[in-house]
Length: 286
Image (cartoon, rainbow, N blue to C red):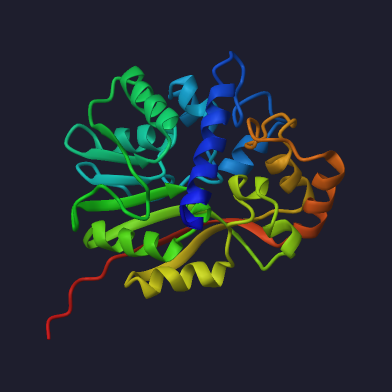
């Protein structure tokens, strides 16, 4: 087994374990009794939007932004969610596209797929389809999607150029995307080597400039960052401390407190969540 497959297996196992932990009542990672404002600051969802969804979809959300907000998704669109997880963005998007549209989720973790399907059923949505697969090789036809969304997933991929190429492939001409993700400036080798921080969306993150260049190299245009939140040490601690109320890393193996402090101090100001948008251009005839 090559290293990319090893990484995908580790990430999938981590998220399956986190979902399993959240089966207990009140076991929410991102929607628990977080300090006022932490949830909406880190994830960008209004409490009103969250209140309209099944509690399980919210409890098992591990996102870093809200790619659906201000994304200009239209009624009747076919939308693809890369790494759809328990379905929080699937459900929000399904309501936007209406009965004439369709939302497709792709995830590699069986536990997440099961949760997403159950949450779509609980929400009474019949326009949601959840498929098993990896985002580097999407089980979706070429030129079939009007809009692609993704929430804090591409940073986890060990083969980001393949993801960007797949994004281009599945989009229709003039199809658009809105992606929330973590980016990070070059970090110390000891952080990159820490396996836990990969599943926690840190070690696999690349610089913003490299991220945007990868999208453009895949053939996508009008690539631009619409929103950005740079993490200071306190926000990083909230993101990474599995014992903190509202942490999005509960379910993952906890970092020792001294190591957590060392990590947050080293990365303060160097990690950000961004929402990046763009589109697939019209073909230019020779």
